[in-house]
Image (cartoon, rainbow over all chains, first blue to last red; front, side, top):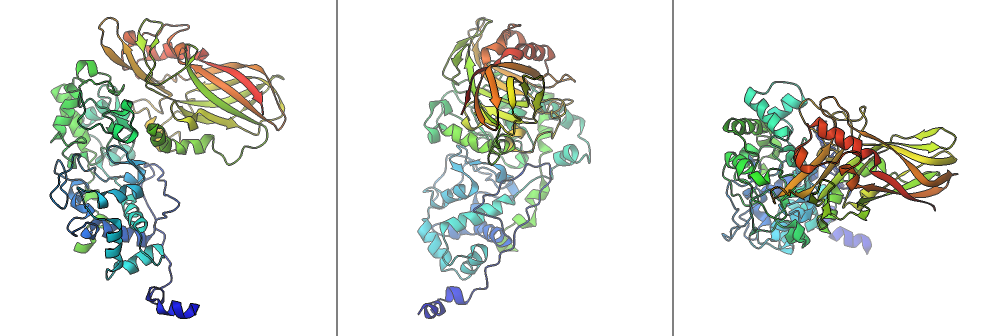
Length: 340
Length: 249
């Protein structure tokens, strides 16, 4: 009877042996060690599947919106709009975060409510103002698709597709989205060039307490992966981390975004209030606003900011643009596989 | 508190370097760290203290490295280690560590470096983890890592305005600035393949006094390249630590 049942199950009969190919995640040695979750080892099949899912609107209720609909490659995988728009026209309240080197980010979303890429990917699919689907429906659609059942089998070797497999595949793809080939990397990490005078001045402003950018945006990832009140408001229409922790000490704290490709990711801040990098620099120079949870790293809060000269502002901007990695936004491995 | 959980993820890697070996080998001392201010257990954010210079202040953040631990045997020899420990107030996992495989003998002193010595305090001197990256000291011309980030706010009596302070120590302009510390144990520890608990205390008020009064207002808020401020803190740092209790398990 047992063999008869198995013979009746096309899921088993028609599939090759489960034999995934381990994915070799190569990145420059000056980037940190990336911790890969033990329960989601990277495979060629998993990364490839995750790339398809990232670009496939099948994850949304009416099959019109994919992850890439708000995380667009040309903008370093963020949305050029202040707030992204859901499938029914609903508008969000926070700027889409750009996806660069997020394999090194323990906490996701501006308020850090998800720990790990797998947990993060669970949310947009069922968010009532984003993709507006349900996981049972998504799993059903994928299970009845012409191609996905075989692709999931190749990636995970399980008979049934699950939401856990979906987010694991997306996370595997996202861990490959690594930027380490900007002019900054060439000059500072590989000694293969020189800054212009303006870029060098900007580098020094950034990396000293003159500008004091580095305490939050320091290191090779250009983020401390922590949460800060950076002086945007005196009262907070969006309370940020407090919404997750319930702790008033976390009021108005938001995750430090990485600055790689920052030239491409306008608008800026959690609510996209600044349209240009010039406005961002003006904020830190003379626009800081005091509130009780202001971060102690905002040293010049009493003066409204670090009071940069026009030349210093231009130099800082020039330095920030050295973080642009055009190879990242043109990497064929990150492009829409349905347009190949 | 949620923040502890969030931050805890980021400190995991350094713990693997220092404290979280699989199982300690026989001859172990477990060190437990407590931070105090003027003798009272320090509380982040919610407590106002009075600085020796007369400024009410709070503490919002404290992160630092300890390294080069040595145990002093009463026979005049030392047991030297290469342990480097990262500690952060609010992250309980970082507030304890151990040294194991300590040779049998009787020990009466503990010495260590507050910060990192010149061999370790170079760019890339520590493992490339998220925690260590966040402690980097990127000042052009300098090297290495912050030894300490001690941050909060103080009430400037002259202006009535709440100001931030950042006591960030490290090497600058060729000056290493790490602090060599030796503390007496309250009673001798006799190691014979056994385990002891040692309670270490750092009193943050001592960074602001003895022998020098450190005035937030005098040195301003940006001291990373201020060698005078670094030297004042280095001198004050010699007696910030004590060992309150040793207990054999």
